[in-house]
Structure formats: C-alpha cells, structure tokens
Length: 335
Image (tube, rainbow, N blue to C red; front, side):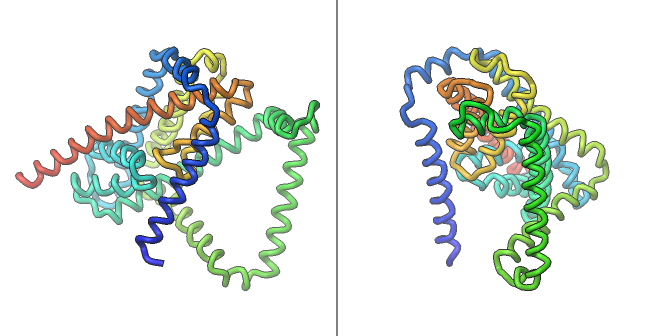
C-alpha cells in the first residue's frame, strides 16, 4: 500500500469516526434551545477557564525547553510556546498533524532537526498518557459506587445489581482471571505469539512508549519537569472547573465531579476525530455529566460551548504564533 493511499484511508477513517459521533450527539437537537443555553452562560467563568488553559499551554512550552537542553539546544521559552500553540492550531485543521508542525516551527526558529524535536514530543505524549491513565484509574477506584449506578441505569435495572464493595471485588476477580489467563497463554505459546506481525508491532510500540517515558531522566532538572507537568494537568483541571461554573446546570458540581468530566473529556480528545475531538469530545462529556444526572441537553450545550471556545481561542493564538515564527525566521535570514 503506497503512502498516499494509506493517508487517504487514515484521514477518511478519522472523518468517518468524527462524523458518526457528531451525528449521534446532535441528532434531534433543538438548535434554538441549544443556542439559548450557550449565550446565557456566565462568560466571566468561561473566560477565566480559557485564561487558565493558556497558562497550562505556556507551562507545556516551559517543560519542552527542558527536553531540548540534553540535545544541546537552548530554546527561548517564547519560541517553544509558539510551537505548542501552532501544534494545537494545526490539529484543528489536519488531525494528528500538530506534532509535526510543532517540530517544523522549532526548526524555523532554532534550527532543531525535526527528527530530534519529534522525539521529545513523543516523550511528552507518552508521559502525559501515563498521567492520564493514572488519573482515570484513581477516578474509577474512588467512584465505583457512581459507576455501578450508571451501569445499573444502562442495564435498565430498577435496583442496584450489586453493592459497590461487591462490584469492586468482582472487578478485582476479573482482573486476576485476565492476568492469569493472559500470562498462561503467553508462556505456553510465547514463541508463536512473538512471530505474529501484529504482536511484534505492539511490542515495538510498547518499547517506544517506555523509551519515551525514560527520556525524562535525561533532563537536567527532573524536579522542575515534574512541577511543570503537575502544573499543566492542574491547570487543565481548573480550566474545566471554571467552565463548569459558567453554566447553571453544572455550577453545583464539585472538584471530584470536575475531575471525572475532565478525564473523560481527555479520552474524547485522544480518539482520532476532526477539529481536535469534534463529536468524540461531546460524547464523552455528555457521558460524564450523565453520571451526575445533568440533562443531556445541558450537557450537550456545555460540551459545545467549551469545545467551541477552545477552538476559537487556539486557532486565533495559533495563527498569531505562526506569524511570529515567520518574523523570527525572516530576522534570522536577514541577520
């Protein structure tokens, strides 16, 4: 399969996924009511949330500078920040192209070879994915009773199928069975499994993922790397908290509910879809808010408002950053 055909199939699949989710979440929507909910939001809280989001993006730029230093590149923070914003900007236009455009930006401003800066982006993504998994695990274990309620509701039961403790024990039992069965199969058929191309690809990806995480050890100030990382995710969480305060239907939700909505929203963004999660983000936000008995119409309005606000903000800032990078590049050429 040639590269052009592969890319065509890849982007067509992304469009199909996003289109299916968009149709599902917006089917039967009362657009007048949706617009009314959006324009009546408290934009003080929404604006504060977006401002905190920008601070988190700036911290992402700061963190990236620490990863460039071991390669011998001293990148100004503003150049790294421009690159981060350009990456988000391009992701809204071409799905999954943001990482490459971010690296291209750094090549224009600081002559970092794309293949080297791309390695740092992979390391960041691997590290952030690990943090997201840990957050999701914590939320799952701390809210098993709520998850049980949702499962019961989806199953159409009128009473709880099982007590939270029993539900927790059943999860542990199923995980134990899965680990034992998987381990036994691997030990018995290890040579045959390792010869399967799909298994080989998975192992290569797993190795790359682990190597990406381990590059964090090369930074000169690992404690600062952890501080920036914590600040990034705390900022994203507070951004979500402020946005929840911006709508009447969601302003009563606490920080734990906010963490749940935030984490599931991240899952929606991770799934490949056009415009950085259009459709998938909405679906998972609606799913998260349904756990707290927020009506679907209000949840859809919230998801549309937050996704739309971020899109407008990041496209605007990304466009400005693109101009700034071109100016820096021109200054280098004429110097």
